[in-house]
Length: 259
Image (cartoon, rainbow, N blue to C red; front, side):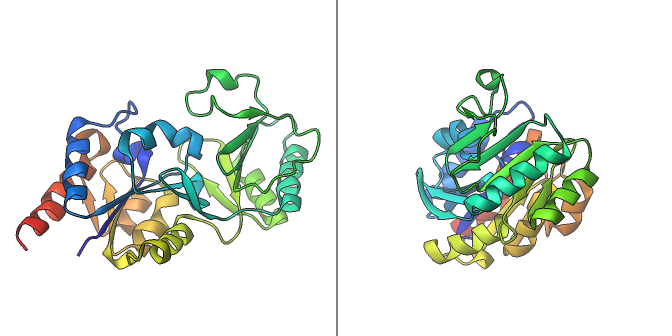
């Protein structure tokens, strides 16, 4: 029995233009009215997901690639580097790629060495930081724009960090070794009392694979990369075809109404 819906945002629940369809909102509302909890699980920082959190009002918000979990804005789980580890990762990035853009998330606060923060759709609430002095924070995730994956892998190995790559991007994320969406789901299961076996998860990218395999039912949208489709239990329609809503309507609502 499905008791929790867990979905990625970009390229999964969201259409390519970043919108959420009326149909999707309607289906999610109907599922929640039947007692099914709803959570998002996104690589976005909390401030980058905030407008969707306001729109969707999920029961739980897994953000920052699984290093943070909030419930209605209140932090209930955090996996972070120590302050020393945070500065080691940042200095290693700066040494390997001088001048690289770096973002570092500590809870809802994001530091960024960009002169164009106000122009960013996702991170216009970030705080400017040139990293000339050590940060006195414990970062959940540090992201940098690097020349290629080999540079990122060398930094991750040197700092004992978990490396996360994203399709079609040269932005690479460094996180605590024990972090990830699966770790966040495990923590959320203890908090919510809902087993991963009773959770359906939707995703499209490499950082969703463990989540789809870990949950009782893993669904890839049709526009997901091949590795995600191969890891999923089923494939639904694409994000532009409201694939998440289609699957939920065909399974969760029908299952509930026929019990």
